[in-house]
Image 1 (tube, rainbow, N blue to C red):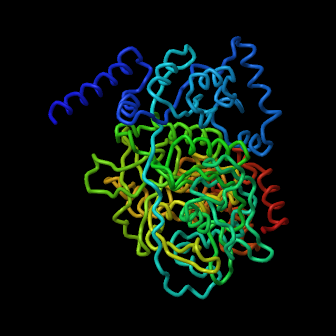
Image 2: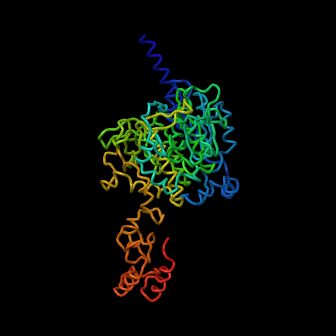
Image 3: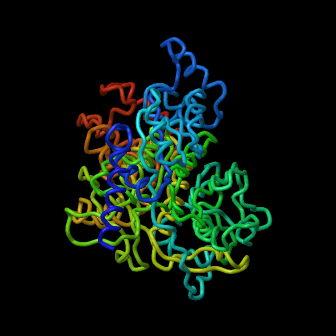
Length: 563
């Protein structure tokens, strides 16, 4: 027995040496996986896009705009933060390189423009062949994560109002105040990455308000249908349907979701029948699909941590994190769950999963109905010390549609559920403030979240982040829609606050000079007094000088009145 064990260990060591010694391109974790299992799923990272001259490279990038989705181009033009509209990451993979990968016998799964890589299934011999190719930069394992939790709970009787079962969770986020102003996600395209979606539920088929799907793709079966298909695992579409319901459900008086007027791009990326149901290459492929089909935002309740350590969660290493960084640079607002690995009171430890560590992703934790943090909600910080999670929403007994009953509703728990609730807030705010960049959306949500407002700083233990999201306050705190909190506009000198009410003057009825809410002759007197005292607020035409032109500007404004 001992002799057999020694032989087995020696064989494992030889296999490890054969892969690791002469082939430094192969990641040690992939070497171990191949030695232990004989096959593995891996990323094959390529050196370049196969364009040999600078002129050819520039021409290929310049040609992308004419063939790219027009809505995606418009979004990039409005919100992209990297130089230009397109860059090398948007170019397709070199076809010759891809064929070279296939020629090794490895089975190609996915191609990613953004990370310039092919995902494959391979054997040790195929790994050696791939590592020998001059256009292959590196090989590493495809990381996986825990399968989605679809535990459901019975719901108490629902509120007798428009939102029904969803009333408490939307009110907790102050999202109803945003809806009351007419901002319900209309015109916004939301991408969802998950397990699949049952769309026969009554809340997706309210007469006159059918669920709107812009595009969809099943990355498990490689077909354009994310609904249940013959041969699917019976639970395959449960989790995704729970997530879709929190945003898109619309059955007034019974259940109304957080972005009920939005339209959706659906990506089925997880395979419950696989030994590794959550795989990062499908996530990146889905994210690229959403961006290239004109999505405004993407939300996912998925994390990837197997074969990564917390030290890898630095915003730069995990492949899904790199994908999210690229999406946000292209103006796509991204929302992702922090995970359900729990938390402690030690700010030096963390329990996150990728891509929750991405620089501009909104990373979401979970609270109960009373605002207390959920025991399962993962904590941060990231490896480089950034606050994660950042925002909280209800993730305990969250109400949504029942995937197994087209007329039923259910409760479910997890950061999986708090994440799409925040996504509903973001979608509604995109409609309200379409000029907000990804960074400005983050700024406004963090500045107005519960813990930040109460304490003036995020949670130092990295459990609650900036606190419970307050969508209504985020909207009302930027009256001039410039993506900066009104208080900072005023304190920084960018805006005046002549009546001292905390709102920039450009948002006020300026001819009501005495601020009593009525336009009358008293305002003329107040203006004249201000002018005589050289009050800067009497510079009515904002030219930096007090002169007779200000009287004319005041009289014109008074005559026009205020809306």
